[in-house]
Structure formats: structure tokens, C-alpha cells
Image 1 (tube, rainbow, N blue to C red):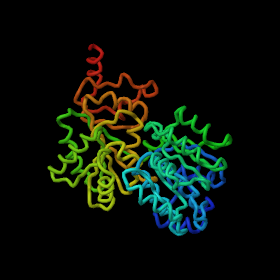
Image 2: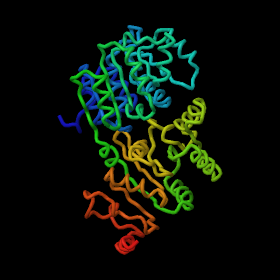
Image 3: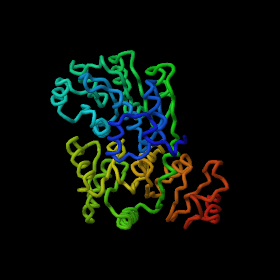
Image 4: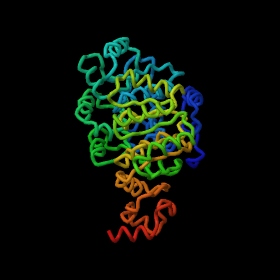
Amino acid sequence: MSEQTLTFNDLGLSKQTLFSLKKMGYERPTEIQQKAIPVVKEGKDLIAQAQTGTGKTAAFGIPLVEKVNPKKKKIQALVLVPTRELAIQVAKELKDLGRDKRLFVLAVYGGKSIKHQIDFLRKGNDVIVVGTPGRVKDLINRGVLRLDNVETFVLDEADRMLDMGFIDDIKDIVDELPEERQTLLFSATMPKEILDLAEEFLKPDYEMIRIKPEEVTVDRIKQKVYRLKGRDKFKKFAETLKENGTQKTIVFTQTKVGADELAKRLQEEGFNADAIHGDYSQNKREHVLRKFRSNKLDILVATDVAARGLDIKGIKVVYNYDIPKDVESYIHRIGRTGRAGQEGVALSFSSPQEDKFLRQIIKQTKADIQVENMTDDEFSLNERSSSNRGRKPFGGNRRGYSNRSNQRNRRR
């Protein structure tokens, strides 16, 4: 049976889980779900490379809720995630997946009262804990979180964990886990450091699954860049907002100050917008996200860290008000749309000062990114990779880009 025709019924799932999937609006398994669910159900250790937007939470969440037994009243699974928002989101999805099994799932993270989390743990009902490394370690040290009965350990967004300096906390937590356990490691990228983690934490016969990033970004998302002078950026951005509609729109900025300033300017122009970033309290961030999810807020202005892992349905357009400085951040940002097989649009606004970041994104993704308003002759594709030579720049000649401008560049 081909992957295109595979259904959740073909994965040997229980009627309870199939019913939950139907209620959640899941129609067909994504590629990572098709490949990972059978491996996890077999009880094998797994390392999987998959970007956000590919359905990776359900890839480990579906077999996880199938495996745990709510009658045991012991913590049978631990999921580590890098951010508070992701802890909340993953816990909610696991609760929804296991609703008909009456699963108790607890999210633990900083920025919330630890007393309430301790009270929940002492009740002894939770069978799955989802948490950030710092808070999980704190609860272990206080003697209220015991991991003796954990059968499945999930390390989600492992590369981000390393970037944020969590490796020592993770190793301390792993030391508290039983040796006989199933370990699942999910990462958007697969550098040597992640493979080293796999060798340290996983059994020698672990399985590996890799979903290529370009398959995530190119196939379902129409990408366009408006390249213009910095002073014209907001005007063009506001115009495109009005053209495309504003409901359920995410806009990314490079800095926290930039997010606040852009949200304020949008409000002054009459747009229903607000910002989230790492300097806001957890209560403030959750309040803004609740408004956004419930359609009481149209435009969410966010930094990369604050929006890491956000999974909000119905986002058709993502805006990069600032071009990200690395390809991974670009992939993460535009992955907020075009999720679970749906189509999406990613619109970016680039000033000449951001040319080097734009070049890198185009070169590494090899995506058909349409670039318009090429007003500066200094922007050239002379540095593009040899694999792209002979192709028209960005899918075709654009206004302001010509052989003549190339000749001028070579004379400089």
C-alpha cells in the first residue's frame, strides 16, 4: 500500500484512538506519522528528523496514548520540550488524543506556581508528564516527581534543547529514568551533537527516520519576498495585510523591541494586533495566545523563541517582517502555515541590509521563492550555488534585475 493511500485504520490503532483522531479533524497520517507510529508501536527506540508542521507531536503522541495504562496511576511517560508554550501545546494534544481513555496529562514549566504542579503530582493521577528541563529537574530534586515507572521517554526538538543550553539538565534527568525504557528523540536538524545524544541515550538497534526540510517548505507553501528600502517596509506590509485579510495572521520580527514596536504601530493603524516575546510574563503570553486561538485577536507579532513549536490551526499566511538570520529559523517560521498537508503562503519583507540572509535562505532551501521590487542593483545572484546555475533567478526575471545590472556589479 502506498504512503498516499495509507490511513490511520491501516496503522493498527484502537477504536478509542481512531475516534479521538476523527474528533480532532485528523484525516490521513502525514509522512512522519506513517513512518514513526509503527516503529514506536513495536517498542523500538527512534531518532527522527522532522520539522514543526509535519505532525511530529502526533507521530509520538498517538502510539504513546495507545501504550500507557490510565489504571496504573503512575507516571509512565515523560516528554521533555524546550519551551513553556510547547509544553502547554504538546500536553493539550496528548490530552485530546487520549480523551476517550481518560488520560491525565500534566504540563510542568517555569513561570507558573510550582506549588500547584506539586499538588497535582501528589494526587498521583497523572500518567504522562510534559515539561521543560529546568522545571522537571526542580520537581525531581524536591522529591515530588519520581520517574521509576517511566516506560517511554521523549526528547522533543532536541536541537533547540542543545542551543538553549539544556544538555546538563537533560543528562541529569535521564540518570533518573529506568534503564529499560523506550527512548524517542525528535529533532528538526541532525548535526553531530544530536547523533552523539542518540548514541548515549538510545539502544544500539535504534531506528532512524529523516524527513528532508525542503520537502516540508517547498511543496505546500507559496513563498514570496518583497525586497524594498527599509523606510518602505511598513507601508508595503500594511498593504499586503489589507489585501490578504488579517484573521489568524502571524508576523515574525528579529527582536523583542521590534515586536513591541510593530504591534504598537499596527494598533495605531487600526489593526487588531498584539505581541508575545520572552520578556513577557507567562500569564501575559498565555492570555495573548488564548485570544489569538479564539479569534479575538487577528495578528500575532512574535519573536522566534516565543513562537517556537506553536501549532495553531487555520493560519494561511505567515509574514517575515524581518528576514531571519539563519535557514532553520526561516523554515520554522513559515512552517506555521501549510501544516498537516494544507497549503499556505509565506510573505517576507527584505531590506538591502538583509541581503546576505536572503541569499543564504534561497541557496540552502533551493525553493522557488519569488522576489519582487528588486530596487537595488547591488543585489546579485552571482553567489548562488552551481546547482542553480542556468536557472532564471527566483523563478524568472523580476523588475530591477537584469544582465545590465549584473555587468555593473562586476565592474564595482
